[in-house]
Structure formats: structure tokens, C-alpha cells
Length: 331
Image (cartoon, rainbow, N blue to C red; front, side, top):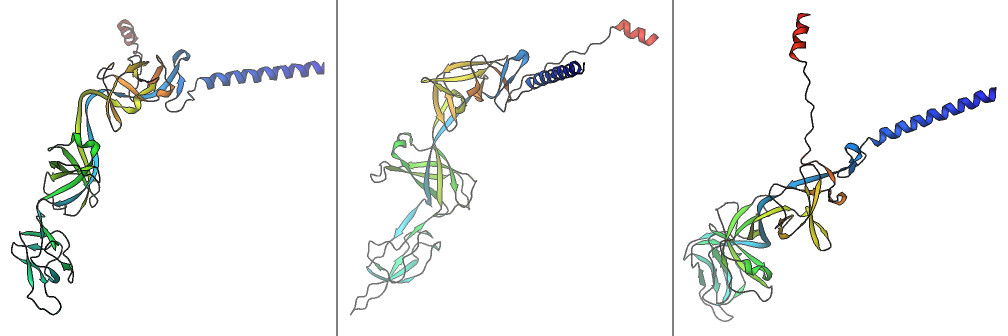
């Protein structure tokens, strides 16, 4: 009798544990255990993939070339002595303003055993000293530049562009210029001249850019980082490059439908700049393409779009008929 009662207790305990385990499994299965942009369960047990989409829009892509340059005076003249000898005196320093005819330095043409009057080196134009003058005692000839005079009120940028880009170079191109002294600040400039020759040593072509506006913060001699805009690609739909899936030498996009399923479409690609690319066919303006979560998708998959969530369905509130309301008031 005792053994029978013990067996009943064991069987009952086993049944209770089984019921608890089954209940726990059902509760757990209802939870979405997927991570961001992963798979979860939707209505009636359907698999739902969390994605992020982006609207396809017609946009102009601006191609550009990055290069370096130097800020210089637009008009600069090197100053040469009229006689050979040694520099005996220097009357200016870097940045000094001079007028045409001012004495910049003196050259002593004397040789051992002879004594000659010092020869003045005169400024050929008015402006500022934009290169460091030679030091006293330096030997010079009539072909040696003592210094350079320039107009620091009107500055330009001299930059070199690699040979592979020269077909796109022309006057009037716009550029954004950055200076080391002012990080984050953009100075606008325009190409005013393109060299007619390519430097055979560096395989580059020189371009001259003028600042669109005068700015006292810009000084001659500054190092410039130039973003030169070359070509505009307009009239095409543009999406993020990350949206494109490559498979068997074909390009695909996953397009989010109105019922929050996706369609896998073959598309043709156009020009690309930075992280954006043109789509030339099989896509309409305003359609949304998946840009995150594509690796978990297949044609026809259900999605949860975090960038454009599905509207929440709300049930209409039921109101009692007018007769019942009247009856309640009478009571």
C-alpha cells in the first residue's frame, strides 16, 4: 500500500513538471529574441526581419578632386640687384610694406684690392615682402633674386592636379578650401587659370584659384587643402551604396512594398560619389530601399522597417445604441 502511494506521488510530480516545462516553452516562443536587424516572429508565426530603409530621390552628385596648394599673392615680382657682389645691408623683413623705388638692400661690388660704392637694390613695384630676404654677406649676381614683392591684399591658391583628372579641368570650377589655422572653416574659391602644360616630373597640371571673398584671416604662405568640384551628375535616382547587393555579376536592391514585404529587384548602376550611387532603371522616385539588414532578406520576406514603421492598427470604440443611453438616463 505504501509503495502504491509512493508511485502515485512520483507520477503526479512528473506530470506537474511536464506541464510547467510546456508552459515555459510557449511563453518563450512568443518573445522576439532577435537582435537589431535580425529575425523575429510576426502574426501567425511568420518570420519578420528588422531592417532600415531609405527613400530613393532624384539628386545631383558632385564629383571632386582632393589636392593640396599654397596661398600666394596674385601679383608677385622677384627683385634682382643691378650688380654682382655681397649683400652689405638689408632694409626690409618678411611682411614689410615697400613703395616702388624704395631701397630694399645694398650690394657691395668691391673685390680685394678695390673699393667701389655700394649699389642699391630698388623695389620695382609697391607691395609687401612675401619671401624672406637674403642675409647680409650673401654673394649675389644679377640673376640672383634678393626677395619677392607681392600684393597681399589679393591672394590666390596655386595647386597641382594629377594628370588623370586634367580632362575635367577648366576655368570657373568651384572649390572648397581648408586652412590648417582654421579647422572646420570653409573658404570658397574659383579656378581662374589652368596651366596649358603638364609637369613631366610630377605628372601634374597647375591650377590657379582665386578666393571668392577677401578674408583677413588668409595669409600668403599658408598651406591649403583644396576640394575641387569637377563634374555634376544630375537627373538620376540616388541611394546609399550600402543598399546595393552584388550577386553573379548583377546588382540588386530590396524594395519595401506597401504591405511591408520586400521585392528583390535587378537594377543598373550609374555614377557614384563617396557613399552614394545612381540607379538608372527599375526604381521609381519615392520608393524605399533597404540599406541595413539586407543579408537576412529574401524576395517576399516580411520586414519591420525601423525608418518607416508600420502603422499601428486601432480598433474602433463601440458605443451603445441611443435607445439604451436614454433608458439608462430614465432609470
